[in-house]
Image (cartoon, rainbow, N blue to C red):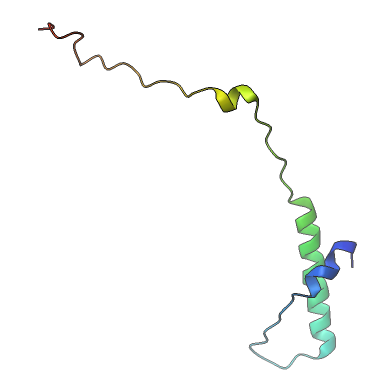
Length: 76
């Protein structure tokens, strides 16, 4: 097992709904599932997106002008 898998095994719970597996069969299932989980978790790390200070401080684009509303109070 890899170095990161030992802490996973401590919190492991297995519920058997059918059949009567032996201890060796349960150990094999736990070993395979744990190794698969550790391998997937090590490759599934997403990089943090870097955000520039400009993007943080800049306001969004304003709403477009409404052409159906006339300008000024004397508009026809």
